[in-house]
Image (cartoon, rainbow over all chains, first blue to last red; front, side, top):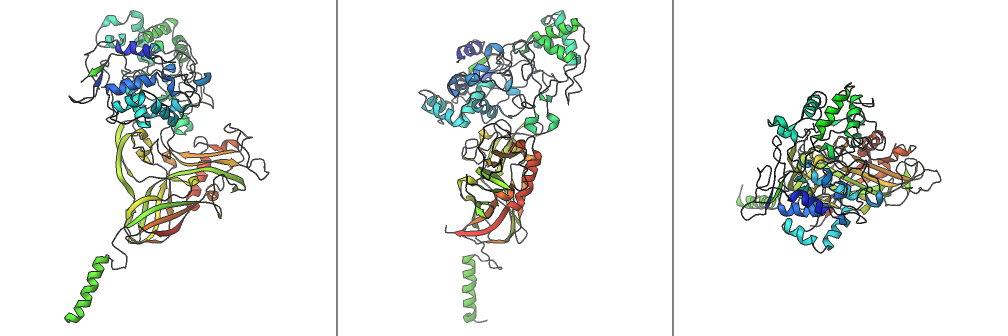
Length: 338
Length: 288
């Protein structure tokens, strides 16, 4: 089902003219560019030279993202599993694809996806463009061979012209389809959170309990959830038991040492991305904190960083209170920049 | 020496200059070379979907594809002639530190579609003369295996949209050796149908998909051949698919469905067979 109005509401009803960062630089007669405001402390938005952040590409990518034409039975879109109001996750343990088929994993948030050095819970895709074809063709997700998708777009009354406009005459192709979807997703960046304001010197941005939680977070969590994006971008075995069906990053590296390891997710907007872990096994932040407090499930290969914390109840509550302050929305996007 | 003797000598030198012959008799003109890989099933020609003897049982292969790169011709004068791409392309790649870099692909990649029949691939101009052998890689090595294939022109052998489509979409990198077929698992001499379930003991499905830069395998063929200057020629290789499958253990259903992960022993056996499965059959001339 299409969710486009929600995304438009979220992404276009924003203030323009903010400090630009990581936007493309279009010439006076060139394509209109896009400016994305990123929080202080973030690097400039990464934009590859092959796929500059043009407004026409972003608009096309957004339309494609929310259009079920890209699923085999035209019932689901990318936006079905990545809802703007849930920080582009879907609230399900594991996502549902065409005909209600259950996906392999929990749908991760797409906020700040431009900053990731690899995609998926196991890092199986190295580029945002490369990632786009996986859900498209996966039997459990959209189940549409890319050539069939391109045929649909070529026969569509509007898409052929939109592609030609955004790609200087080139119609729907693997390159243009993946570039457009990636261009849109690159604009999904966190707005500044209470933590950002606190770090910038606003002592009142975090309440007392959240500040206590921050201190605990810095002691027990920050070695993995580091930096402005609150992730090391690494892969860790966090003590959550896995199955042969989904052994984690072992599937990618073919190394048994990586069995049970998954991407360390960003915690930005974490309060809106429940349920948690790669298979959505924990419904609440309280359950996640309890998992780490007991030192995980003692799984083979568990990271030594995951060990019993023996937190008091008040400490666990403080950690949750802190995590809830990370509930940010998407940052402003200006699609008329020159 | 009189002008009467100089004249014929001059004419000879002039002729040699025109024909471009070296002192060893080879032409200084380059040869135009194509790569022609012919699949065999033991002593017979390979035909997709037709049963043949596979490692002590009956099997058939419906899809047999590979990616060849790093083609190097070993000239008898000691030179190693690398066959590179006509038009290098620059795309994104991730280095070992997960940093995005720009990678120029100057390697000549050849997608070999054995089940589609023989279709020689143009390699371009190479020096003429006598060679002592050839060397190539079955696989995609280094940063080329960590690129954004969407950045490639659609007709590049590594492009997602190309006929090859050998890029694993769920995993970065390329499948560079792919065999899909059926096996006789009940011993009645006929191949058994697929149940559609991977690793199902009752399924006759046989899949071997080899990827990862670590599994890229160098093949060296020590066979003399000669390339004639100014002529189009095919470097004719044969690949015996029965020899490629020699020693594979088909008793375990999980080994009959090998996607590289969790079946490295199967991959290692196939890799070990590659050099002996390939033969350099010779060079065949074609009119230009």
